[in-house]
Length: 305
Image 1 (cartoon, rainbow, N blue to C red):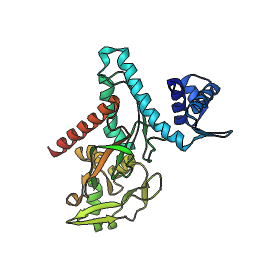
Image 2: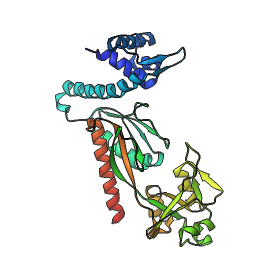
Image 3: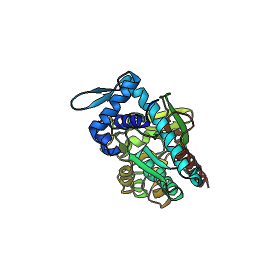
């Protein structure tokens, strides 16, 4: 029988890729963590880490055990919490570790987390706001939110909404420079272009004209790698932007931005929350998923009315 103490030491060291980092989190010494891992390796009869003088790295067997041990420890934590307080068996608890897109996280996810926190005081959040592609398992995350088509079949994905792209500018800019009537017209305008932080490539502008998809890369002199900065630049009259609609809806409602080419919006892109198996998530993740789906439906109905 594998000791839970040994498994917890391994899982923490695997998440930190460091015995010292695991020791700080567990309140142990690095040597005690290393000894627990060594005892676990002896019981299993295979190595879990490649060790050097400076760092440790998981072996292939270690990576497999990390994925499985996270599920086991999560389930045990929930069982312990339920046993400790019968009255709270149906209440989610523990820490949700998430990675979310920066602006979507601020505009959509953060309000949902605030409501969950008020409703479930035993629920905690450890959230990274980033536009980089996170490694769910390798980074020790409970879930990530991704936009677009998903390719990793080893993870479970649940659609929580749809992303609609929006093109527009400030009323002052359109008075000075006119309104584009076709996608090709944007090449005659100053455009604010999103530069992807990880690759530094420019985000293309997509439209649907009849049954034809049109993809453009506008000529520009202004690039930003932050969605809020793009919208602020458009409000300031610097030019046209092509952003997800949730980034612009506040300024549209207050008259600071106006949509153009509204009849040529590209197809919707799915927004999904992605997490390691099993397919039935822990309770704390389940309530988050349900709340995000509900928030997406509320936002959709509000935009339609």
